[in-house]
Image (cartoon, rainbow, N blue to C red; front, side, top):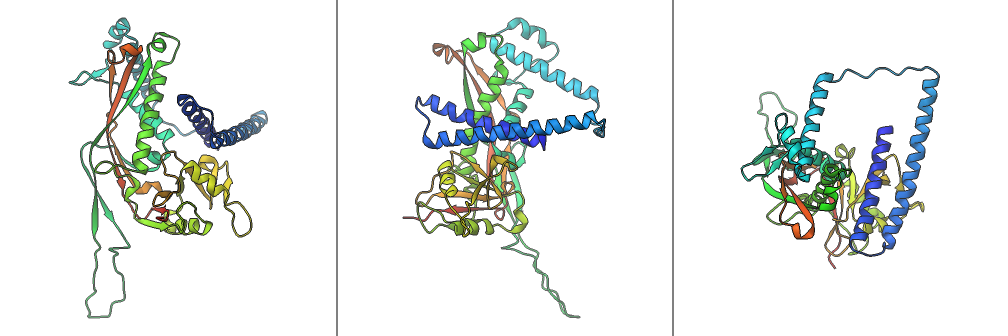
Amino acid sequence: MLKQLKEKQRSLITRADEILAEAKTQNRELTDAEAQELAEIRDNVKFIKDRIELIGDVEGLDRECGDAKPAAAAAEPAENKDEDAEVAKREERSFEAFIRGNAMQLRDDASTSPLTKTANGSIVPKTIAKRVIRKLYDICPILEKSTKYNVKGNLAIPYYDEDDTAITVGYQDEFTALVANSGKFTTINLGDFLVGALAKISVQLINNVDFPIVDYIVDAMAYSMKRFFEHELLIGTNNKIAGLSGVTINVTAAAATAVTSNELIELQDSVKDMFQENAIWIMSPNTRTAIRQLKDNYGRYMLQDDISLPFGKSLLGKPVYVSDNMPDMAAGKVAIYYGDMSGLATKFSEDIVIEVLRERFIDQAAIGVISRADFDAKVENAQKIAKLTMHSA
């Protein structure tokens, strides 16, 4: 419980930072919607902080009473953990030294943990690549909840649709043949689309030895990749990454710019009960604002604050995730997705190539850090996810 609360608190703070950074980048005041969302984040963070302190106080009482908690199960050998941690530290030191141009430290680390170099001179520190991926999963729930395949090259995934090609079961009379239908498997093919993210780092920051430059690079690359990946997962690009554009279960709204409570219920019920347990809603901030004003037949607001759920909002008992990449309610647009995102297959190579550009941005007093990876995403199980499409005006 305590871990979930802390993760939720970090997620809210990250979202608040994103809102403020976007307004600052665009050199503008906060919009009413952004101000309202920040106010909600502030209240939710305070609520979580109070709840964490309460749990800490109660656990403190347990310790004062001498109630010993059972020891945790033995994990992997301590020497293996220590060795892995030391390798990670050496690689991070080497990468930081490379960024700062510290030749002496690079020479000292070279004998124990040199940075791997590809044919084109790119730097590939595995620990940094893994940190970028972990951060990306943390801040992109759609990618984190998808069914992930970490392989190289093309991948063919067999898929069996019970609705279209169900195996038949029936009564059989003696001495008569049983009519068999073995069903048919289709195949979803995931390929390799090269994607990249560029982060520019101020030379002034690099020269500040007290500044955590590696953490900054990991965050900058992860957030850059998050914006791109989330768009491709939700919208897709023709002849490239398909993402959720392959969803086939569809509910069409009666209006072009509004949705009703009955349509939301219909959308939720269009996903079979066996796939409801891990289902979430995905929509734009403006769509969520519109739904917050909807009431059921008893006058109760349909969208509720629920700190126990991921993202802090509940609609018909399921979490609501908001993304700026989702279209608002407009004629012909897919405004809402609902379902279990494990129905989306993603193939993401963990062999990220990281390249440092020292000269390209020298006139901007900056250096560039590029990260590249192979990625693809398609709907793997069309029965798990449904979409709501606005009426075409």
